[in-house]
Structure formats: C-alpha cells, structure tokens
Image (cartoon, rainbow, N blue to C red):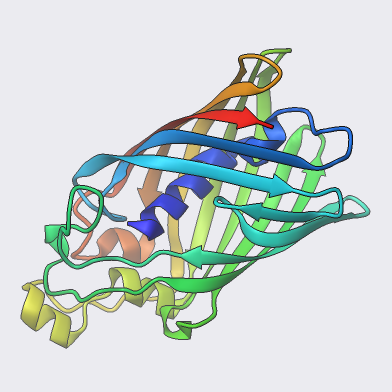
Length: 261
C-alpha cells in the first residue's frame, strides 16, 4: 500500500513540476510550512484490476537554505546550479502485502506471493527548464533492501493555463526498472508459483510504465488551496506481460486541501 501511495504521488502530483508547498507564494523569509489532507483513488497494487479510495496526508517544511522535510519528497536538500535544479533526499519505498489485511492495505490477488518489506531509499533528482517545459530525471535507490532494485524516471511538464487563482498543467513520465526491481514486483519464482498458483515468470529490466495526466491547483485565499490531479498509468514491457497484471491501464485521481502557514 505504501509503495502505491508513493507511486500515485509521483505520477500525479508531480505533474505540476513542483510540490504542494510550492503552489503558494513562499514566505518572505524563504521558509514555509504546509499541511493538508486529501483522497486518492488508486489500484490495490500496480497491475491490479481493483481500486480503492485512500486518505492522503501531507506535510512539508522547507527552509531558505534548501533543506526540506516532506511526506511527499522525504528529508533532503535542494539547490540550483546554473540552469539545473538538483536535489537529494532520504525517502521511503513502501512494501506490498500478499493478502488483504484491511480496506487500506493488501490484495487477495497476491496470496502466496510473499510480503515485500518497505525500504529506505536515496532519491536523487535533476531538473532543467527548457522554455515552458520542465524536464526532470529522478532515481530511487533502495538502501537497506538492495535486492529490490532501483528505478529511473524521466518526466516532462508544461503549464496550460494560469491566473491569480488557478494553475493547470499537463505532464507525462516514464519509469525504468532494473532487473531486481522488475523481478521483485512483477516476477514469479518457482516457490511463489507453488503457493500462489501463478505461472513462473522472469521479469527483466525495462520501462515499467508510462503516465500522463492533468494537474490543477485552485487558490482559495492567501492560506488555503485545493490541489487535484487526474492521470492514467499504463504498464509496459515485462510489467504488462506479468501474470500478476490483471489490468494494464489504470486511472488515478487525487484531490487535497492544503493550508500554508
């Protein structure tokens, strides 16, 4: 479930090319603090044919020095070097349950596949503004579970409309997973096949998914804003062909009410 929430945030919220906290004007000191709560409609796991509505808490503290503390981005540092924006953070990659523990976690479609534990991750990003188009490259490197592999994502976003109260943007991204990542989330070992009933399957490195969507931020007043996103995710290559994949294309919707202190 935590892996899914992280995926939804990166795929939908990041379309604007900035975090929730950046949607409002920064405080004069350069420091800011934002908090909010929202809802996200996402699949039970990547490739599931069932979806659910989950709560989406948000907190972010940024400092003029470039340090940030965020439920979305982790704990890290961001700076600008020439035309490039660089950031490094310690984040968290959620795991995956092999049965439905409750409404909010797990899926019975994964019975016998075994649990995937959560893992600390090093999140490194490089951004570049090319005219009105923002380009980003982000890699998530597992730290305490190196056997889960790593991912590499490229994204592009551009504004469609902007005035004093509304900002609308379009974005798209593609995520590449290495051999370990793809096998962890989409492969089926002989042991897993014995207990789950799925056929054995080896998932090799390749592009895991492509995502596209619309992002809308509506400013209510100097403190309050509503941040919403509508996106579609399409699994590709070995992720799409996995026996665990029941549905290759899934919609994702989220909305959140944000307060800036």
